[in-house]
Length: 91
Image 1 (cartoon, rainbow, N blue to C red):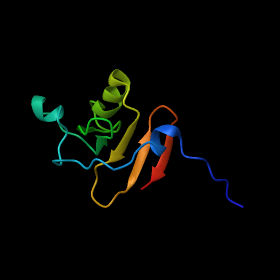
Image 2 (image 1 turned 90 degrees about the horizontal axis):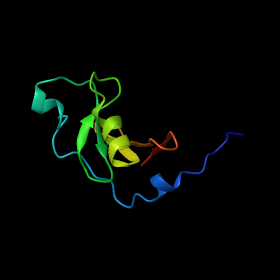
Image 3 (image 1 turned 30 degrees about the vertical axis):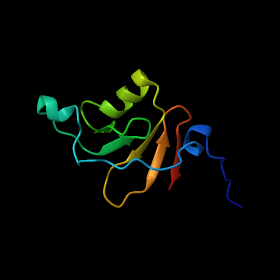
């Protein structure tokens, strides 16, 4: 039998998923930097680079703004992540 984790309250609170407006890191564009993958904040809708990217803008944003949940902004990926509980969920 597979163990099922209850979704954390931050993920449960997402009523509608905020999709990325553009396929770019809003901070890397300002400095001419590159990114690996993109994530979209579910609190404010900003799209930023992942932790595999040199600048790690998404996790820095989550920590400094206390915005817990992001989604993958990658095409055909439908998952979200809670930074606080380190939990992933499909949507």
